[in-house]
Length: 285
Image (cartoon, rainbow, N blue to C red; front, side, top):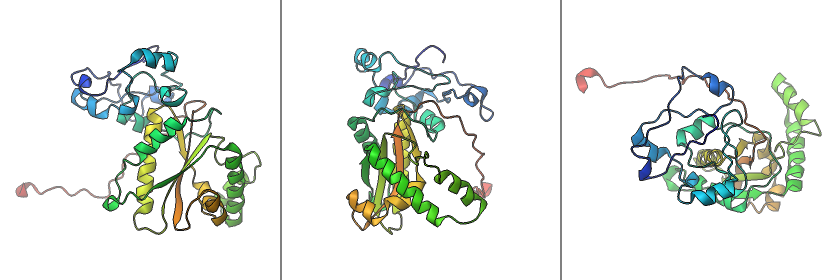
């Protein structure tokens, strides 16, 4: 992977291509522990399915190279990118690669996310499944840094009022009391996924949409992070009125989006804890 761009084409061209050589992966391999994005093994027939269409620039490679400035950084810095949709390296990212390499990002460059990119992320978000196809999500996009700073201060004050006396609360209280701490980590963009208050499956639906958005952002070279600290402030009636959120709609999933300053370190995941697994009895097959 060092010193080269690995291109995967989207569509029929992907079928029959040799997949990238997989690395041994007993858990988390040495390359990933150092922050390198390591492709997962995938059979040739699945390449077309997992190739992310948002990143397919093969139709016009000359334009892609010009817009991306020849930038295709892989390795410790991860895949690097810049303005709008041209932030993608040359070629689509596999879905599984986006899933395995997504990390909560808490350090961002000041450059804004383009309107086109934000709209593209929202388009991907609404492809999420929802209970009874209700599609309950609504969106608020904030790219005003002064407003974000004001909401950060308001959220910190509200949270400090509600803090208990346990060790975890004391840990958070120390951080929230710091004037230099911004709960949005100076990201240029906040996307708030909202939905009808009190709906039986609305929270789950909105968080599934949030996952879609985060994976699409990762595929485009952007970082994201869920900001639970912001939920009380964003549901304050005064703030909701400022943001044109109707009284019967709740702010559910606040996500910051931006260009990462650096690749966040990998976080090991525990193996799935399977409580039970009931197989068909052999005699009934």
